[in-house]
Image (tube, rainbow, N blue to C red; front, side, top):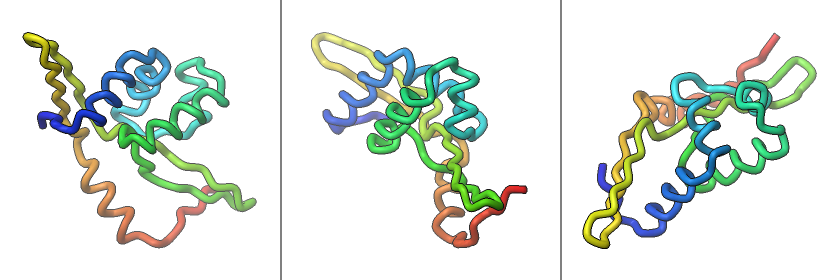
Length: 122
C-alpha cells in the first residue's frame, strides 16, 4: 500500500530513523510480547520501552493484540507490529513511502472487537 498522507509518511520515516523503535518493531513482528519481554529482548530500559510503545500505539505502528489479567488483578498487554514492511524512496525530490500490513492483523483487530472476555493468566 502506498502512503499518500504526508503526516503518516513523516511518522513512518521518524520511526525508521529511531533505532529503539526499529528494535521494538523487529521484536514484535512475528509474535506479540509484553513490555517487559520487549525490554529484556532489546536491552532497552522499561521506561524507554513504555514511552516508545505509547508513541507507536498513538501513531498506528503497533496494536495491542491481547490483554491478560493475572490472578492478582494486574493487567498486561501484548503488542504486535501492524506493518511487516516499510519502504521509503526519495525520487526526484519526491518521497515515496510504501507499507505492507503484517499478516492477520485485521483478523486480530476483529477478534478483539468481538471478544469481551478477559484472559486470566495463571
